[in-house]
Amino acid sequence: MASRVAFAQWLHHAADSDIWWSFKSSATTVVAAVVTFLIIAMAFLAPVIAPHTPFDPGTLSLSDGLKPPVLVSPDGDWSFPLGTDDQGRDVLSSILYGTRLSLIVGFSSVVVAMVLGIALGLISGYFGGTIDAVIMRIADIQLTFPAILVALLIDGLVRGLISSERHDEIATFVIIGAIGLSFWVQYARTVRGSVLVEKNKEYVQAARVIGLSPAVIMVRHVLPNVTGPVLVIATINLGLAIITEATLSFLGVGLPSTQPSLGTLIRLGNDLLQSGEWWIVVFPGITLAALVLAVNLLGDWLRDALNPKLR
Image (tube, helix red, strand yellow):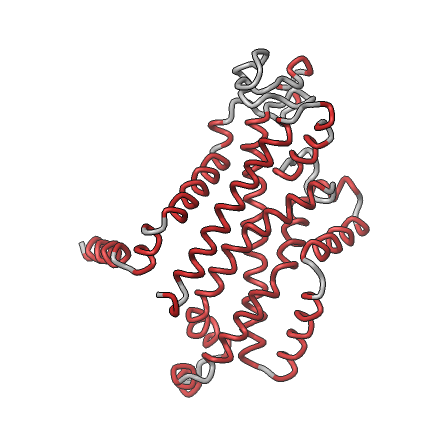
């Protein structure tokens, strides 16, 4: 009974909060949230709602290749509402499965970047001195290179160390690690700045006096007070991570064709664009643009909603 009362109180508090009011009062943010939710839901329900299993060779037929979308051509087949590619794969099903993989890579790489960046930021800001100088100089050096180049470098190093067959088997993990290592600097610098402010406050001094270890102080007391900016960065970086993965896959150094993301689908469709089969590249491109735009709009809203100067 007590848990129900507590949950009801939490719901009432959430409904009356400034953040909820800011969300529901912005039509653009609501639309962006709906679009994001629909794309994510459809992607992760792909095995259930997809008309076909596009990357199972046993279900493909070359006779179904290059069928146009049903809404733009009388020759279209309602079994393939968005048309097919040159291998007879259903474009709609490919988009659903490809979006799921792009989201998995995006979410996972953001988690990698968050964990690494938050840990280094806490250590750098709390201990200071030589440790702080070394971590921040590494961060400064990495900031001189675009994230896409860092990811390309890491992926290239892995390709040079292992065989192509082995790389294709672990390509998802490689690209997640490459993108995650490209984005940790923002988290580290933001957390470090917040820790420099928080570590001199009375509650941290009191925790030191009672004998708590630095690890406990950083994780239990300092970290909860620096999560606001981190959440904003994570939301915005999700869109950047998805774009980075799509760019790498489009360049042919990301995920292989056997594990197609939206970037891979766009690359495969681009090879056929000159021959007039525009739907193979246009529909995945629209999906990618809609997803990234919706996520970025949510990130912009969250940044404003959590900024006390704007509330």
